[in-house]
Length: 385
Image (cartoon, rainbow, N blue to C red; front, side):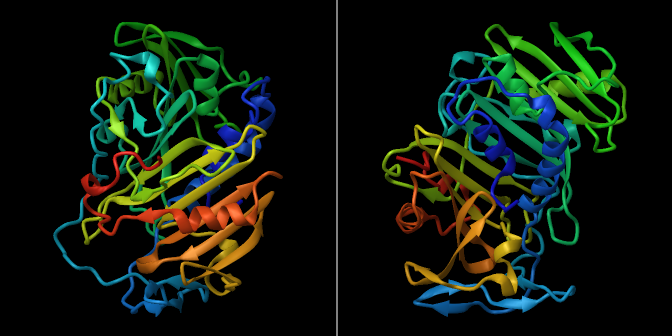
């Protein structure tokens, strides 16, 4: 599975036409294994180095250097400041719209907005991956530095939706419990009725998992999935770390002025980690587009990599705005990889019969990217349109 947001792809691909039932129980074991592996890769950020970047066509392209394991890694610039690092991710910019508590009907309706926030300290997290998509908004909370030497560990997932089945699907918790799981138990979350269920085998991943679902306000469902051996009361208490009185922007340093022909804007994702010595907390982000038949284009940018195009496997066979690029088969579709400066890369993934290589290259060439990756306030208020 490639670098692209696997949880994003799973949630979108399970219902390519937006209808029909999904047997999530049958998919759970394999899905959880792939999600955790992809989550680690998705949040595998480039390690710091000191090599200079090459320049091709006036654009800086990272120099590939042999790593400690003999593989090639992308060199990043030296630290510019020793006192700008932080133990937790910076906050996303505030969106000037009501939160889910005030307007539950707006959840999952605007790809540029997340109608809630999470308190990382309550979950013991250091970073989060956010997604705003059709009918569902999600935050995945993780802990760890996010470097190649110290990969991240998933801590919790928070999903909001006006539909309980969609909320459970977004949290990978739908489809019924395995036979060995205890029965669900009624609980109270901030005075509201809820239900919690324990999965002792962690859905075959060997880690105790709790799933809590409740209606924080009428017309809205929240699902909290936590990997912890603690008691149920710890999970219900952690739910206080979900704040529905706030709205955030799905901030990415990406601007796509025109939606690819025959598609609509389907989702926005952004990942925030502990700020490094250069003060940058943002790590990666994506915007995806989907056609009426389920065809998709996903543009991802940031500190992301794909083993199929990493290091010596990167063999340029295309150019994008003068930069060397690689077009290659990846999983069920094709993908375009374009290395950028300072360890960042641009990828465009393509799936379906009604999208072409031309569409992928046109999306890559038409997108613009902000130069300032530290100040999120300078980024486009809406990444698409």
